[in-house]
Amino acid sequence: MTVGLLLITHPGVGDALRETAAGILQPLPLAVASISPGEGETPEATRGRIESLADDIDAGDGIVLLTDAFGATPANIAVAVGRGRGYPVITGVNLPMLLRVLNYPEQSVAALAETALSAARDGILQATPPAIGHHEANHGVG
Figure 1: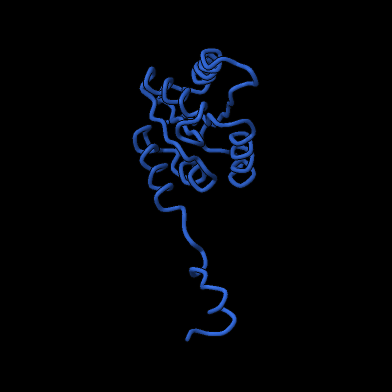
Figure 2: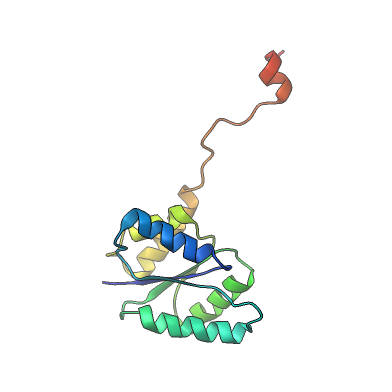
């Protein structure tokens, strides 16, 4: 099974995520491409480019569309493409999500979409204890 990943993001975001993942996991275990709306490009033109790129990377097992900010232009276009082609669209893409998905290249489209969602739920953590007030930090409590 070879599912493709298509990052549809604001300019530079998808490219940076893909390049960083490639630097960590070389070679990438799945086909990963990124695309962004062009300056002054209509949503219809962007959608056409996305669909063409999707055709290029879909090896027959489908594609998961990962996008950055729900409600923004890239995500809205991703949702339109996903609905039209039956591809799952996951918003909020970040590096931990992408790396998690890439660690399960044998999964189906549906399973990879769930893996991306679980990475989103589990991958955002507060790595230090909550900050305490300035007064308490410098003078102790009480």
